[in-house]
Length: 90
Image (cartoon, rainbow, N blue to C red; front, side):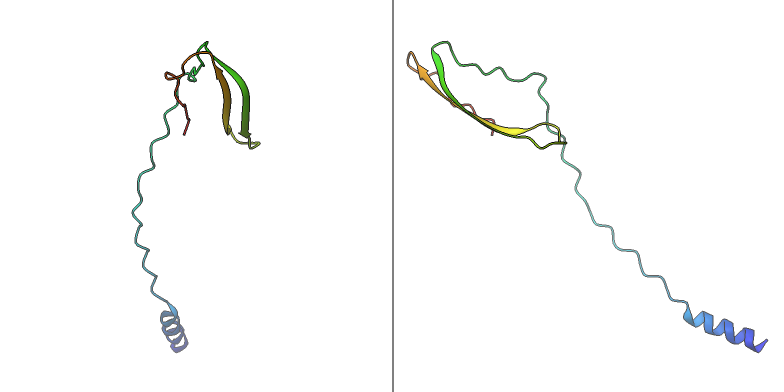
């Protein structure tokens, strides 16, 4: 009986109190997904602007959807170009 009592006393001394749970971290909600255009924009040069050179830089990563890149062009104008503005996707 004494050995049982001694064993229980030793075992109860070995029990540790559980550590408190960490405080939850406040998180911000995820931003909404970007809007997807129903159709690609139809950016066209007017008839009086004739492209003379193109530069195209494309970055494609296999296994990923989509791509990124830039396109630049040189054009010759047959009339005043005050109505033509720079178009940028940035």
